[in-house]
Length: 188
Image 1 (cartoon, rainbow, N blue to C red):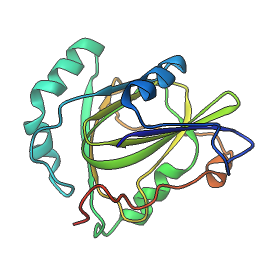
Image 2: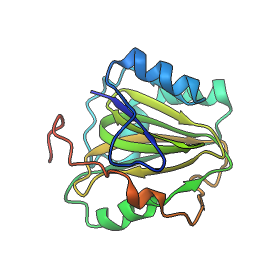
Image 3: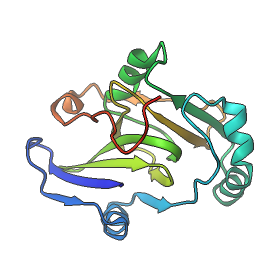
């Protein structure tokens, strides 16, 4: 189940609000300018699947998004708990950063946690299979996949270079809850 927790940036111990109803999550994130949608993730893809397999399985959705929004590049991040570089990959995304383009992710398997730092609030979004999140360009954020990652996400970019982060140098991400290994998915 997708979840949104909203915190005051100075009080990471206690959320101001918690939402698990999809419509409420969509509404609250829309107020903050964040796209959040439920899509059909019906192809049998499991973490560890190759980029080619995932793109082939979701080609129609990818082509539609690219045509609608002008995205120029697509890739896939697919991790499971035994991935040899999981710790390094996790660390890469854990520090607060921004992008010069929208960050769009469609989760086709498993789960990941996007945390957005908007003004004086922190929006912690647990994304699961079927969730599409669009984080606007310039938004301070970080991403956690837990110590035991289990997810596949399609990433779309307007920049042909793909994922390019501008790190803020702030340590705020260290103060907020990390993603726990996800229990609603099967760890492989």
